[in-house]
Length: 72
Image: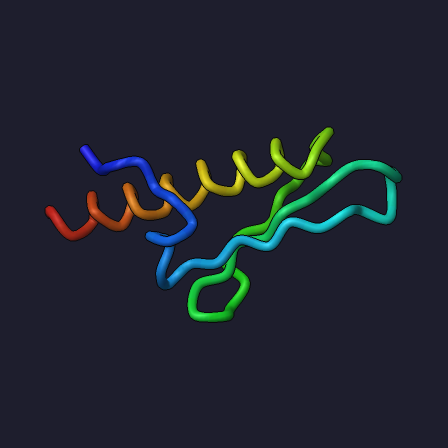
């Protein structure tokens, strides 16, 4: 099992959370790996914190999938 990730252990990934133009007052996220877009949120989030938490979960899934592929 992988340890919980923090912003300091995200390398080579980065998380960008930004306000959405529409709907106003909502937030979206994007995950980049080495600066290249890897994944983007497909739904608006109520707060910046909730968007960041969902992005962090997506990064953890990406790490887990990579670890599974390396084991085969």
